[in-house]
Length: 104
Image (cartoon, rainbow, N blue to C red; front, side, top):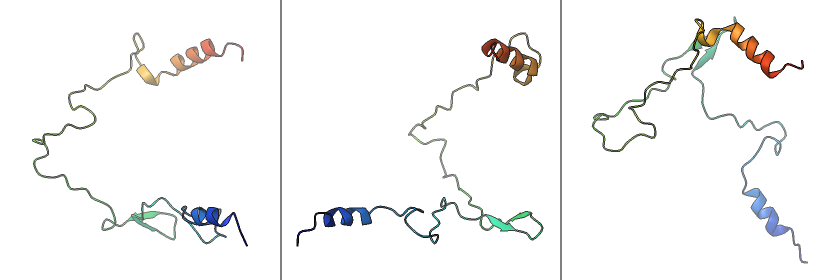
């Protein structure tokens, strides 16, 4: 007998599993792994043999390829002219909020 849905079912089975396809026994996670353990008092102890360390290759400064972000870029800072507190000013935030939400 001809069954038109069989080819479709074969392709569906090749897809990755999700948590909705399995009854409570599949936990996908993030693939990060653990870096320590929890204590019985609610703390967390870092086990340094589990922590990932990345070794910088030798001769990286003389490498010919350029990075995605230039190393010559100066750090950018916000412009808060006339405000001694700068970005941490609550008065500046409230004034801007009142200007944008005058109806509230």
